[in-house]
Length: 514
Length: 97
Image (tube, rainbow over all chains, first blue to last red; front, side, top):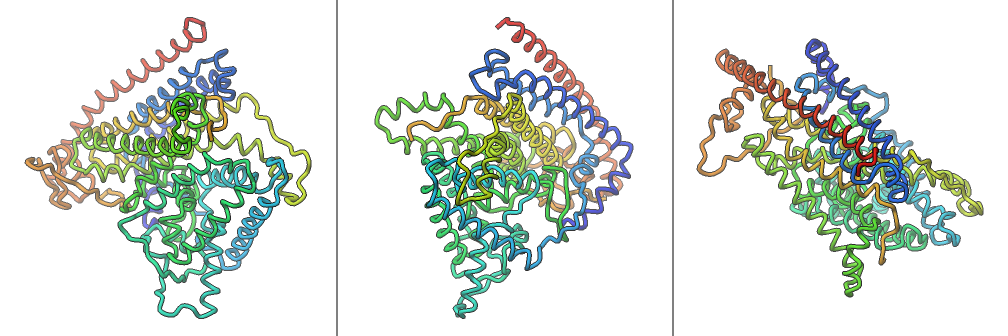
């Protein structure tokens, strides 16, 4: 699909060299300015970010850190308005370097990866149920939260989405299909290739194991990917309200339940399950679109981070936009419920006898509704600001990929310290999961690490501004209407940045009342 | 030369009831609210005739003038923001708040 374009950007760049040079200098200046602003904000807010309230007042107050984040995002937008050479922008966005990796790894590689992932899944379940008293010595807890949810997830947007290759549930489903085929139980069932998913299944299909699968059921097309949206919200709710982060037995139980549901769903609905229902696969697929390693028509290519989003609108299915917004919202929610402000806000409700679980669920849904509402409102305003007949719905679909770098940046800010801190413990326990060492090492992060967290959030937003800028130029004719069309989304992004920065600078406690 | 991105689909459009579009693209029938946008679209996305090319060039000229003024405002805005931020930091770190 990208084959015809792969050659074009280089041609465009050499032809538009004069203009491209000027734009290149402008890009250079923009980057210099951004670095300078970061250096200032970073330096000043180092303490505010790392230890929250405790040291913050001694240096820069939180409100100024938050405000500075908003200013950086707004300033970045003003800078991108100076970059109006569409050809040069495409030169940047379409740049790619082919990597000699086969797009579909061989059968042997798939078998080895599949067996290894299923082995790890089994190890998590076994060590979860036979855990030592101290969860920081338990392989299941360390591996699932630090290794997988923090570390592996970060690789999906920093490197590339390898999840279809190492998804243990896919391997189990492939195995199930194979056993079923050998036993000759395929009578009367239809054979599908990749399910009813549409064009985006290509990558997952080749990586998904046997290629031929027996799906006896189908999920109504009108549901789109809404099951995955519901699944994502439900997963995050369970993660927040239950002690699944510290209780190995509960975690192992949850993993067993998830395994049963996913394997049953995968056997019954085929690839459609992983594309439209399984929230974990959807999350990694979404994050993977930000990554530099991207699948092209005939292999794998390195692209500049986030640029793949500028040529890849969401498929036209119900719930696609909602999923992206939900991903953005749950990363915020995850941090929000750990802030003191949240505790103060819900304490009266819980004291009045409202079950805490209900309060958490209500806030999760209300916040999701608010984020969707704000996004829809912004899309409607875009239509007016650009003076265009493009429908608000089309605008929503068009610009939704620009939200993904924000979610990725926030995830990195939230989990990088967690991962680095627990990495030595994970390594030590991983070396002997059944007899973990008595004392595990945990890195204590230096004070400047707070700056890194702020830079992750800001970096995600700056990338999002660039993606939205590029998408606007593809959608609206000329330069000025494309620039004006971005006013509403920039306002929304400034609002998101300031919210996320505020959450990040708060002292972290575990969610109260649950 | 058509310059639209081959991977991106044509966006859905809708004209509000009771409103007549200023023009419709003769190649892809997309309606536009202003002649200016239509001329730009034809020049950017299709293979324009001589007359259309002239209109496209004229529209580009208008864009250039407007863009100059816009950029002037953007640069002033950036400068003011930058200065205000520096002063704000000086005030806060200097203990005025």
